[in-house]
Image (cartoon, rainbow, N blue to C red; front, side, top):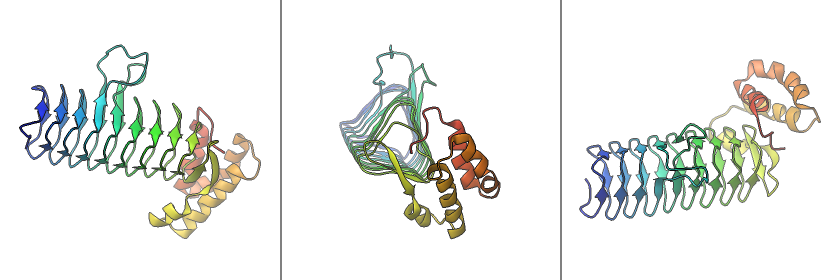
Length: 256
């Protein structure tokens, strides 16, 4: 179902059951799987693989060259999973050879209008990107994270699973899983209790996450001291282990 006014490169592979709207351009080495709907006036530049049952709305620019001065025309790639919704005027760029040459988006994500996802970023599953938010290159956004409108994430940061960046938050360090990050300094203000309850976390697990939060953020411990205090909770609750792992793995530091 390719509209007669669409322009599709002969090297593109469009599965039966995919739909391409009018005035949309599909470039070389693009693969679009069954059930995906591409609206009108969309650009899918090149070297992009799009999975099943996605919806991409008008004026989105997908798989374009990275906005990186080091980029010199190398063959780099973008992969998008299944059942994502990508709304109007979003921009999602391919990777660079300075990283893994790949930008990767998982499945079941909602990416609202005017969102920018830069080169080499890795997005998990079930995330929400609210309109006008932007992430820089080499950012990792873990499963179930929510990014509020107009928020921005610095290069090489990690947005932890189930964390929530409020509107206009500016994040220059990693967010610990399950936390809320606010404001122009990227300060942490508690755990994402509402989100955790909506996703079926038990009261006992939320209490354990709350206790881990107090150890990390409210008791004045250094990182190594906090990790020792978390040890027993880690063994009992895998969610607390995710928080402790964030402390161990961070390269930019944890937002506090």
